[in-house]
Amino acid sequence: MSLMLQEIFEQPHALERTLSSERRHAERLSRRMHERRASLIVLVARGTSDNAAQFGRYLLEISTGIPVSLAAPSVHTLYRARLRLSSAIVIGISQSGESTDINITLENAKRSGAMTIGITNDSSSPLAKIVDEVFVTRAGRERSVAATKTYTTQLMVLYLLASALRNSSGEGFKALARIPEWTARALKLQPTLLEMVERYRFMRQCAVVGRGLNYANALELGIKLMETCYVGAERFSSADFLHGPIAMVEGGFPVFVFAPPGQVFPDIRNLIYKLGRLKAETVVISSETSILEKATRALRIPDRIPDLYSPIPYIVPGQMFSALLAEAKGLSPDRPRSLSKITRTV
Image 1 (tube, rainbow, N blue to C red):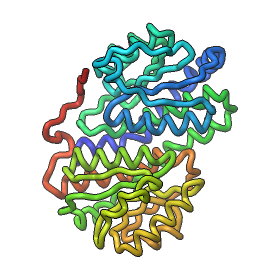
Image 2 (cartoon, rainbow, N blue to C red; image 1 turned 180 degrees about the vertical axis):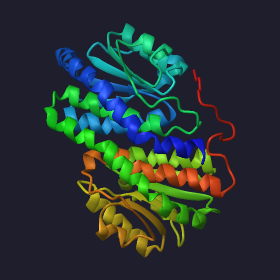
Image 3 (cartoon, helix red, strand yellow; image 1 turned 90 degrees about the vertical axis):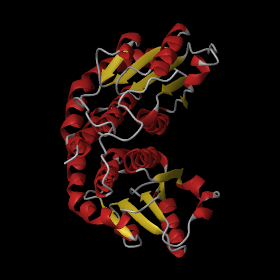
Image 4 (cartoon, rainbow, N blue to C red; image 1 turned 60 degrees about the vertical axis):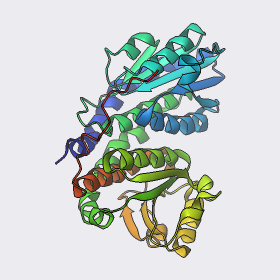
């Protein structure tokens, strides 16, 4: 078993540890963030952490009503612009906490008057020393280059920050407490995935589609297929996909689709019908029979999880698919070519 697959299976416990360790921190921080009266939240990240930030953008805007922006670190590192951030909360996300451009952006934000928060897997990292408040994901050491458990624990911390910002009651935390259980049940799809990956052993390109809170998962599954399987994976919101890129779809073209129940479901279901008429090869991740029966290949999520809490359990089949497909191709998902665990960009 690859290290990547081992770490995928460690996620239920990592999520439980992160939730139990950081919940009180989020509750304590809630009053301070409310006193801040922030009119803007800025998220800064790279790579897989940037996909987590994309999730955070949707979650925080939905939960708090505060506009959220994704930072462009080059504005700080290359163009050396000074931004007015005195009414902003700036959140840096980095597995290692050693990404140079992320840390420079956080330093500039702090000098510009922003409240800074860090999300990292290393409490002694440079990022942790820069920010006003640091949240530590309890993923444990991640040995595979491909990030899995650090991605999902970053999402868990973002849930905690959203709860703190909206000053939610205990009900929100009760829902979060179910995510490790839902994640563990999603791991039971491994036998189905083992059978499925042989069909895609020679896949060279595909599209990955999600919308809303699961758009981040489309980005994340795409990057996993690219870095571990060397598949050219185009990644889209379902809304953007219909505005042109769907033209590349022909018979047998693989399209992976996240389809949780909730607000985005009717739009995704209509897309699946259209892809069916185009004779695309659709792999659908959902709990809903009405859409799974229209798929070429169905990955049935065991629980009917509300859209708001679906992203963590829903990425698990995608992570496993990537790890198992890499092995079927004779590749190491743990050591992708040209990559290292820590990337320092300026």
